[in-house]
Image 1 (cartoon, rainbow, N blue to C red):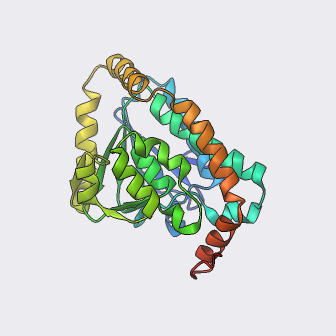
Image 2 (cartoon, one colour):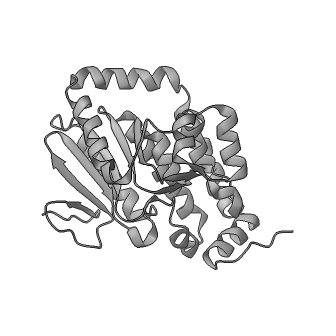
Length: 272
């Protein structure tokens, strides 16, 4: 077992609870597991740094053929760790965090192997962004999805980037502007997911898809994936830059300050 300063643990038999991101390598398939179940796998600064470290190492590791991003607990990912961010209460810190997350999403797109989201439960805000950014997504039939920042006075600017490039513009706008949840069947119909299966066969389904992908030539998939995003998502870096700056400024505005405070205090927000 290996546990480094970035919080990445090599998953063999048991894992230290403090590791926010676990890594298991098996026959060409790398499984990255979000491991903050009590926080609904919210993306803390430590988690994002760990993601960057492992994605950087994977980019040059030709033994890895497929990546699966999974999660422990009942939720896939509840987005950013709002409690951590509000405690910092510093726009420079918040800007750094959102840019770190945006850069992490770009690294997923640029990784020369397919990346599968294995969605075991709720995926909201940056968690839904993560699902949208992965190349493929398999979900349990009880999973649900939302970009619900608008309900906190915080428009999901950065999740809008991959979401609007994955599902239709009108459907993305509906999710972003209403903040309402959609179920797994709807997410499949709208194109956010590739497959929906019962929870007890979720891992088997994602591994089956990974097994299919790892039989393909790695270099061909690397070239094809790069071309796929280059021709389909021109301008994504500029979009992420703008979205990162926008959501960072938004986070420090009164509506978001009240909305996040209300969320953390489990009450309804009070706006003018």
